[in-house]
Image (cartoon, rainbow, N blue to C red):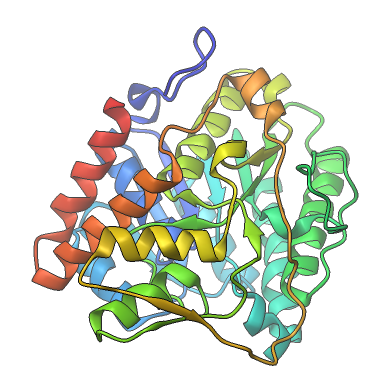
Length: 359
């Protein structure tokens, strides 16, 4: 990654380091483990089995599971999680395990809070009791902010107060992390940060009620894409963008705890577009006469306008986005076409990682 001075992701830094990833069977988690494996890290994952059948096929078929130790467990089970910490003695921990869907938060709010809040308490308790951990990153979301439908991006010092159960539980996860950092990690044992990333797209996301996975499913069936909120603005980015930001944060704060902080991770202003524009790009790049239509649905509240100000991570760490939104959609279409053909999806992931690193 291009950066300021030494602030770039260094694959050699991760070589042979013990890294624990919670949520490793999810969309982001699989890509993160694939990157870490390519760097030569000793990776252990802790998560439930893949939330989708297709995701499970990627996890197993792309060789991700073969290059790591995979432990199936619930982040709410602190005793089992602590056993993994005790046995592995990780140096770096990426916390991605979560209930990540807004609509599921409305359907099952108690489970969402148990997972996203108490799950964070459990992981931080394990970090607190494991002296080997030097760097901890809690991955939250751009939705942690009190959304006032501003036309400018939220900064890290804006109020945290997500509206819906999912968003609010992630706000709480942030506050839990802040409290633990001040209460237990000021002695230099471990550097603690959070990363608030925007909406991610990319090959391997099979979640329901997300625009790009929904678009791919419709395109494969030769159906018209149904778009619920075409005018909603979101900070869309390819999944590799925040993952390399996470790797950078974990690395630099391991080496210098003064860089431990709260960071937004999102696209540049030119790539903040609405859902209708995103679907237009998808249809054009997919081809085959693919179209979409707006549909009226009686859904729970969702923010209409959401942007992030990423000045802090750019100025402090030298991070910047690499792929514009059209590049991100093209890479997603390419991955999905290869998946459709039954190609070696592990090779496809490795190629896209190499392309990203080589930009």
